[in-house]
Length: 138
Image (cartoon, rainbow, N blue to C red; front, side):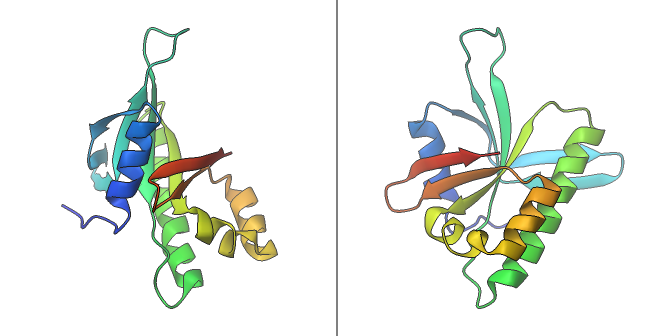
């Protein structure tokens, strides 16, 4: 089982505060001979649907001395998880959870924005101190 990110509980609590139910912590991804773990699987009931909306959340801290290296790892993991979900025909939306301070600095760089747009990364932006979701970005 993988180690939990230092902001794991902050994101989990933020999702719960926002009305999400945590279904799996961690969420086991499998396709053919690939076996991986994403951080969370959560569900939120929607009034118009009999089944709720399910999301997979991968949490990244961006605390190493090199945010670019952190981004390389996060991007690779995000793309791999998204592909495994799609190949397994899971209709779950994948989100990369990052702190608001990281999103408002590192992710505003033009080069990073171009890569994010190219790979269509979806974000869950959270505040680790208040344990709240700040925004969802598609």
